[in-house]
Length: 495
Ligand SMILES: *Cc1c(COP(=O)(O)O)cnc(C)c1O
Ligand SMILES: [Zn+2]
Image (cartoon, rainbow, N blue to C red; front, top):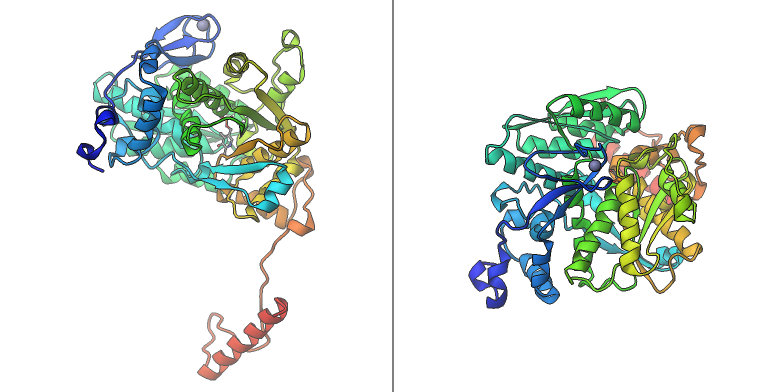
């Protein structure tokens, strides 16, 4: 729709100008720093940062009902910069001019209602939000769109040039980083570090295809992260892991979209997300808090973070019920099918602790929960979901399994409605499905295939001349082949 056709009371708000005043704030020593330089950790104490808008009060000057209209009407404007996560420009990166926004098709992923069969299994209504429908097939694109738009802005205003963007990854961060960097290939090159043999072949192909320098090192993600941290401390590189607070801002769009998907009525809504490095759950909490503080939503939804028993530092931390006795200890991870969340020492843990406390406080009740699931539950839940119309990845299976457990333990009640995050597309993790359907898992995974869920192709090899390489069939021979094969298939299908 053309701008002149928007209603008069909303027209002036549709195309946002630059506003706000963003700063990095250290969550530990509380010191603040300007955003004119890329910072990843506090220059004073080395701890993790979050970006705050010093002028966020201005957002409250616009009525919640007006904001809701702005976002809803923005759906209709054909301006690429506002088609993705920057539809929520004022809440994501208000200092970034629309001309600098990098939009590759991210965000506004589908929300698909579970059928009756799955609803019976979960014990409450729920939807999958399919973040695998982002351009690199995972939610990481949300954060990269934000980080690379900001970098593009710095380049365009001449504050920096020839950026080398680096990240460590369990697979999807590097795919997204390489994709978004390649769009800016004149000014941004990317290099990614992956744990050797701990990412799927599809995930490995992605940064290679986008032209990034790809390094594989021995160990697991936590080891790659240490190397990348060392690189970012000692060399002039731009770190694109979720330690980079710009990533968090972009990932907040997941919450804003859920608000919009449910017409901003989040009473009785539960949002279930897998937790690895904990950037996602951080962003989800922060996003809802920002919309709540601006009066755009009237209720803070319940948050359920899910971890595998094989990579559970966050659930371990919260299993101590007395906050005073909680001590964070990294864990040594074991093999997990939720490989993208197989992280023992989450970088965003201080953010999780800070935001969980704040979220519960503002909710005036316990409203953030962390639950654990087994590897078996993750795999079975992924396969069951996908047999019922979904495209969940293993981490999506983890979220779904987490919802079932949260229902069983009473964290979620039957009159609530859950939004379950499938963080990537099923096909990125099809190798785990192959193991389940085929040769089976190594013992370290502790997954035993349930025969009822196993599915394999059936090869029909009839006892007549067939269209194989080097064989030339007469019309009659070919007709016979078609008939015999049809009969075999009809018999197998009991037609
Ligand atoms: C990165 C990732 C996760 C974990 O997200 P964190 O922000 O690290 O907690 C979960 N699922 C997928 C598919 C991912 O790529
Ligand atoms: Zn500090």
